[in-house]
Image (cartoon, rainbow, N blue to C red; front, side, top):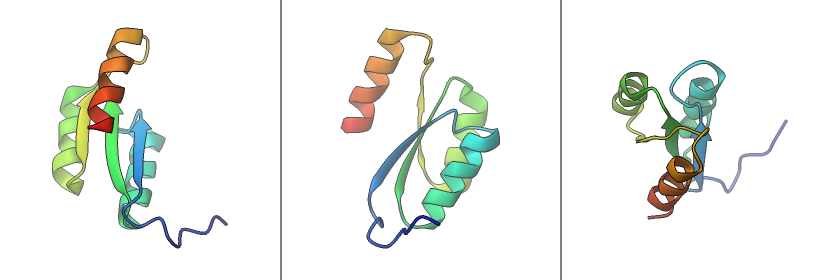
Amino acid sequence: MLGWDGLEGAQAAITGGASGLGAATVEYLQARGMDVTVLDRDTDKGQAISSRLGVRFIEVDVASADSVAQAAEQVAS
């Protein structure tokens, strides 16, 4: 089991975070005090998990290098 002590406030960006395993990962990390950003191309589901958990959502298509670069800049800001 991973030790999560000392990660409170640390940042995590989860691709595919709007549904399935990605969403479960977002919930797990957010519940442990991490500052989580959801990255996904599904705007509706991304906004829904953002509203439900109070996490940041950025729309991104990982098949597009430009989209990934823009999302990375937003995560870093």
